[in-house]
Length: 128
Image (tube, rainbow, N blue to C red; front, side, top):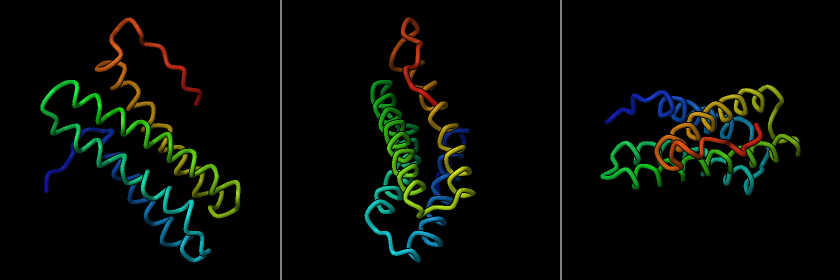
């Protein structure tokens, strides 16, 4: 198996594993299937897209895959917040997952900024 040795790739894989564990241990026992599956899909997709980006054949393809990973991370934050506010995820799990996701989002945005937007547009409109 090819391992992604980038910090963002490692963090995304660790996050995906944590998301799967929360899904198995908390969400399935509480019988919540709609939001939790959306959360699981977007959470595991982050690392998959980062992995695809590392095998890109062009800068544009790399940027597109990183952009998708960034959007999936933003989506995961949305589902995580909903699951927490509706009582399906504990405060402890929420805080740990949220903290990791925010770190991943910042890393992905920095990569996007340097590869996609160009040096002149290095401003984030993202509110963390």
